[in-house]
Length: 151
Figure 1 (cartoon, rainbow, N blue to C red):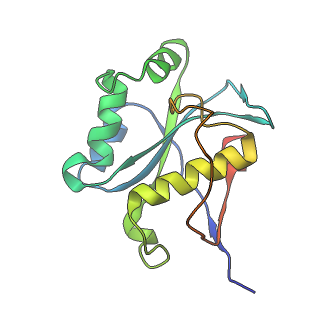
Figure 2 (tube, helix red, strand yellow):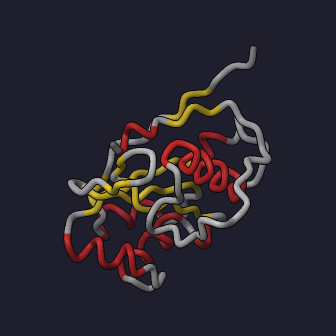
C-alpha cells in the first residue's frame, strides 16, 4: 500500500493587489475562485475558476496574479468574473512540495488540472483548455486534493 499525501489549501485571500504583492518571488500553484457563485460543472458544482502556475521567481505568483488582476494576461473570463463579483485566491508554495514531488512544477499544474477534470468533468472554466485534448495522467502521485475547499 502506498502512502497518501493530503493536500489542503491555504487560507483564502481576497483577489486584491495588496494581497498579491507579498507573493513576489514565490514559485507555486495558485487557484482563483468566486466567493458566492458556484459553477455547474458536468459532475458537480465548484467555485473554482482557474488553476495557474509560476515556474520561476522572475515570473512569480505575485507577477502572474497581478497580470490576471490587471487584465494583462488577457484572460477574459477572470476579468469578467471580477466585474460581477468578488474573487479570492489561494496558493500552494512549490518549496513545500519539493520533497514529495520529483517532477517539474508544470507537471504538478497538469496533475492538479487533470485531477480536477476527473472529479468535475471538465477543465476549470477560465483555464481555456479544449475538452477534446487527450486526458491522461501520465505521472502517478499519491496526492489527495481537497477540492471540497472550493464547494
